[in-house]
Image: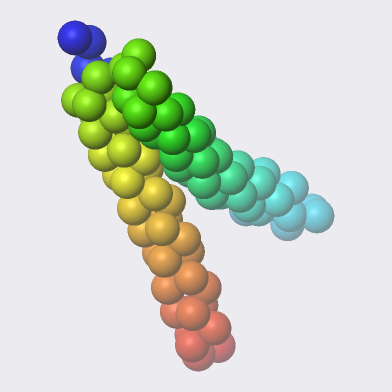
Length: 102
């Protein structure tokens, strides 16, 4: 039995990049990278959920094993919890920015 890791999104941020005063193109690219990370996290959760449903169907049809279905469901659960945590942290950061005194 092969154990595979979860397909978590990777975000690469260039630490040497500084905010641009001309149009904010660096800010846009950072925002796009964060947006892409959110989309990837929820996409991974959705794919894991589909794989879990397929594993359950195979198990019920008698062509799959129960341990495969359980592993697939656990992967889906972990992916969903990760995506929800990313969303919660994003909302928390946004609220903190709103409460920042200028």
